Amino acid sequence: MDPNQPVTENYANPKTCFFHVLFKAAALAFYILSALFIDNFVIIFVVTVLLAALDFWVVKNVSGRILVGLRWWNEINDLGESVWKFECLDQESLARMNKKDSWLFWWTLYLTAVAWIVLGIFSLIRLQADYLLVIGVCVTLSIANIVGFTKCKKDAKKQFQQFASQTLASRFSSTLSSAFSVV
Image (tube, rainbow, N blue to C red; front, side, top):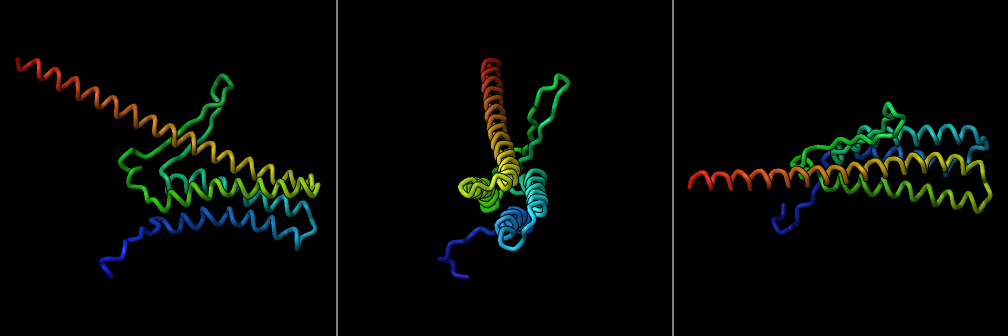
């Protein structure tokens, strides 16, 4: 290996990356190609939504946790209010996350939603209201993951900042108290 050649980082979790992309690509490809080969809307609806739901589940419960160290869910509390719950790795583990894995996760998350929106615009232009229903479900699932992971990422940053400020304040007060106890 040439020592002057820059070292490129590989994917740390290639199987997870593969499945992260597979269900997104499968849902989009089936939807696009089914218009050419299948004349039954019910089959197109069921298979496309099933693939999008599998993608939603894999991203939310598997690839989000492995590729970016984040997980989210939403619960309804006793008062009937929606409550977001977040899990993230500790800051040290998050800092060690593979950059390529993270890049793939976030870009495919956003690009899939954009692709569904573009397909929705085409369906709107072609006045295909029934296909807008399929796209509406797929866009909703994509955006739910975007919102969930974005909130989770912000929550992780906020937790880190609180931890850092508490640690700094604790060290400052212990240094101050030890300085005065010596006198």
